[in-house]
Image (cartoon, rainbow, N blue to C red; front, side):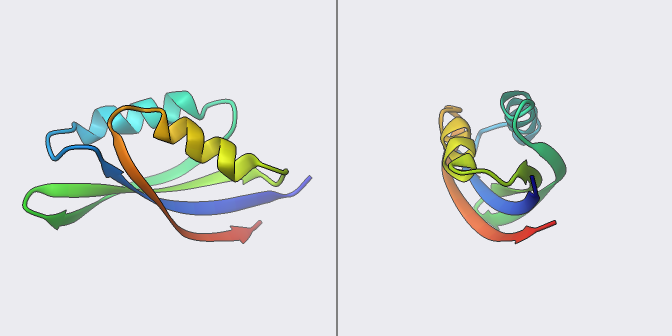
Length: 88
């Protein structure tokens, strides 16, 4: 089975969300599904920062929906935007 690399931009639900804590929650929730390659913080405006995350997922039906649902179930996550995806 192949693998895919996907990049997400994750906007926190509030500007007061601790991004280090959010990174840990995302890592812990996706441990069985994804291999997190990299996190980066991107300033947006007025003290709000977004998280950019690159992860490797197995190429299987429904994996993106499953991954996004898991991340959206984290209360500190406000929005998720897919930035790009490619096969390995």
